[in-house]
Length: 189
Image (cartoon, rainbow, N blue to C red; front, side):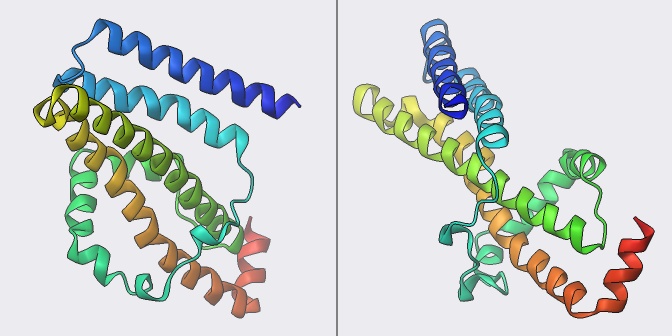
C-alpha cells in the first residue's frame, strides 16, 4: 500500500510540475524542451529508484543482434559516448559509480544499466507523447526542440545502456566462471 501511495504521489507531482512549466513557458521554445526533459528526469529518477527492484523483465534481455553492438555503432553510439566524455558526464558518472572488477560490483552495474534504461525509456515515451500532441496542436516546428532533446537526453541513453549491457554480462560471466578471481576479489572487498 505504501508503494502505491508513493507512486501516486510521484506521478501527481510529475504531472503538476509539468503543467506548471507548460503554463509559464512557451512550449515550442528551446528552454521548455530542455527544462521539460530535466524536470521529467528528476521525477522519473526518483520513481525508478524507489519503485523498482531487480528488473528481470524479458525486455531487458540482450538480443542476439545486440551482443556485438554493431547496430548501435552504426547509429552513432560511439559519437554519443565521445560527447559524454567531452561534457564531463563520463567522469562524473565514474566518480559516483566507480568501476570495479568484482562480481558484486558488476552485478550492481548491470542493475544500474537497467534502471537507467527504464528511466530514460519512460521519459522518452512521455516526451514523445507530448511532442505528438504539440505537433497536432501547433505544428511540427513547435515540437522541434522537444524532439531534439528527447533524442539526445533519452533515446541515445537507452541505446547506450543496451550497448553496454552485453559487455557487462560477458565480464560478469567470466568472473563467475573463474572461482579463483571471484574469491580473490571478494576477499579484498
